[in-house]
Image (spheres, rainbow, N blue to C red):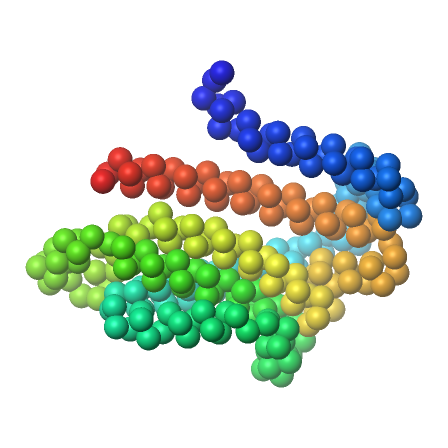
Length: 252
């Protein structure tokens, strides 16, 4: 068994199992409820070849990219600031957990009043889902850094920015990246929810309209597209995460 097959055996078997389960479920439910895997692939191909769905896909990807940027930037910065001081992290970490436990639907009216309908609201919806998980992972990552590294930075008279850039981020990168990987998926969910409730464009809005019209073809195509993008991106991020952890283990 080659190392390449060992690495990809699990994901390949998972995909095969999901496709088989999907086909069996289609045989049970029938055309009124869903489409088969092969039908969904052809429907998605036709929709992407046309002009109806492509602008909404671009809109969603743009909003998602912006939301990920803000989630990662704010989340990592928060983790660095709070994690560097034990007292600060002990005070603010429970607050972050409490904030994240608030149902996001309760925040939507506030965000709508603040940003209105459109791109800013979608980006905000997406970012708030990813900021806190990334911040919590970053706080724990900074806490677990070996004290000798912090002392080395202080001996070298590093400024806070230099300390973060040269000491904190490199040492905590594997765990921070795990938080980014989880925040990535949550930010995608938040962006789609934002499009469903706070936008007139994007795949989330199209999906809501398709559900209202019981357009099974469109529902299956959008779901398939989003699932495929999320699965591929998560697989790539997981691969990077695994390599970072292996490199950190070798360095230790």
